[in-house]
Amino acid sequence: MPLDPKKHEMPVQDPQVRAHNFSEVALGYTHEVAIAEAKRCLNCKNRPCVQGCPVNIAIPDFISCLKQDDIEGAYHVINKSSSLHAVCGRVCPQETQCESKCTLGIKFEPVGIGRLERFVADWHNANSNEAPKKVASNGHRVAIVGSGPSGLTCAGDLAKAGFEVTVYEALHTEGGVLVYGIPEFRLPKAIVAKEVDTLKQLGVEFVTNAVIGKTLTVDELFEQGNEAVFIGSGAGLPNFMNIPGEAFKGVYSANEFLTRSNLMKAFRDKCDTPIMKGGKVVVVGGGHVAMDAARTALRLGAEKVYIVYRRSMQELPARREEVEHAEEEGIQFELLRNPVEIIGYNNPDNPRDERNGFVTGCKVIKMELGEPDAKGRRRPIPVEGSEYVIDCDAVVIAIGTSPNPLIKSTTKGLEVNAHGGIIVNEDGLTSRANVYAGGDAVTGAATVISAMGAGKLAAKSIIEYFNK
Image (cartoon, rainbow, N blue to C red; front, side, top):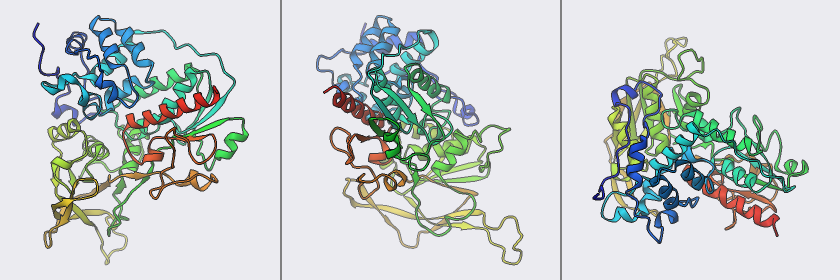
């Protein structure tokens, strides 16, 4: 049978239907399609796809199992390297990582590695009742700060090595950014809960509503008998533009907006969590968080959603798939535009006017691209006299986040860089003995899979240290 030059399409909800619900957009491969896609793999000897995976999943091996219809075998191959199988298959940017290294991609479309990983994970979750086996304790205790992707990965690898692990989560639900940051239509929360439950079966203990640096300090974690601490607290401090009008009602950080919808369930009809529903919404930014915020606003009932980004479509950092989905759903892209002021309603003749202080518009200026900046991207330059106002009722700022300074301010000797990221060496070790860190707490906002890679590295370093 000749090799199919194109990867099999992922079936999705109709755009006009999904724009009004929070059900998952991508529907997943069928069994027959998954096997057919697996058979496109060339099973290369040099395995370049593995080199492109931050957690080094043995990709050709799991696909080989899938070719033989051994789906459970494929799951166990993935499970050796990843504790978040179903999550990665949904939100990992495979197109710039493993799939970008695929040999088949030199002449044709690469193998749909992420789609196959999702299929395997979903099949296992639906068909396997086998509980993971808890490993006998090696007598060592480790505390994990944060239950996001880096913390969960580190916890899983340590538990499989016999460590007694406790994960401390600041919010009331485990999962970190996986539950408060990524919308249900991209990552169903039942998937995250399933991954967390698997870790619990491995013996990992979770403590919620625990803000490390306030509820407990890092030093107190050691005093409680922990021999090492991994900080995977993420980057939850939102960045703003510092332009006039950001204090008006109806201006949100993307973190706040998505947390209210995802974690506090504002999208449910009977939920009283306050959030802007309906009207016109401007989302500022071009990354995956901006796409999530814009598509969430649409599903919450917005009549019009604009994405304002200061560069062109070519520089847009969000995944191409998410951009295409947003366009299909009717979201309007205002490219080469940058906000200069947020306009609000003010009626000085009637201080009791209920409209006072609420957003009415976002003034933007047109941009043009100049010479490349330090990162190689062409620098946006304002075009004088080109300002105009986009009428809107809410503005969501999605221009990035920074690590929260709370842990640094309460932990002596913990060095951070100019951006507030914790400084670590090549083993994930900080300037404090037996204190490791990884993920967004180190790098600032990045991808789920890169955070997982950092958690995996730290776990490996901890295991090696205590096995000396």
